[in-house]
Length: 381
Image (tube, rainbow, N blue to C red):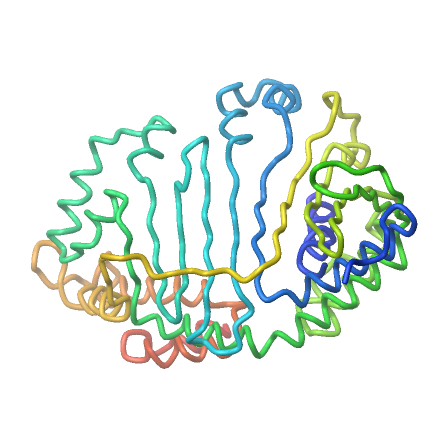
């Protein structure tokens, strides 16, 4: 079931990542959607908000009492927004992620401006919302300051933190440009698969746009997705065979306004019929919703951000692990500090780098060569 949902999520992302007034959705819904998908792939910038379109009572019913009405409301009141531009140069990179969590607006924010990552969070509000002991935040700040991490206190107070020295971030931006052609190839192949395997019908218009329902053959869509992934060398061998995907149809709701794709919804309740045992589902629909808005995005560096040199911080941390502990004594091999501690941290870094773009991995190996001399072999091992 999890693999099926992963495949379907990929199909939904195709619609969101690919989308002169275009063809009429009423007269030719398929051409209207195809035209909107093509225009979306060429947009200078894009803002996508992901949320769950549902009533809290539906989630409570579906969970069979495992989540409370309060928890269900927190889920419904949460969303995450991605905004960014298609920049040709790293210096022009601009992107922003904003999360509203359980009714807390702008609970978490991330901005990328050039090669600097800015971050902030409403830590106290989130801790209070989820019932955590906010009195411990001061103790955490004091302990961090004692270890030379003065940025922790303002971070806990909701101030902006600027992470500088992230050369791999610049490298990742460069890699993203290098992969643009491959990504477009993947999008094109997936859109082709969508066109081959779907029927589209016009379902009327509302304030979002012209509503079109695409009926997709799950197996055909998955086969096209697998072929595209394999053509790009993206772990195709690890994907399950097409024969394991049910030969069933699923529906995706799309809204088109003129030549733009404005919204996508994927009703998750329809997957209940794929379950091994019957599932009682609530009335109505529970849909994963993607609201899309084309247009150039302006992301500015926040004023008065507390800056942190990440490379110095990492090197100081790893170096400190190799020389002393909190007591000031030299640790033994294999203890929490010392060589054993440093090696453990290096292994964790290696695990996180596995599967990342080659250029990003090489950049990390070069930057941490002194602290983690075996990093390259640990990544490949």
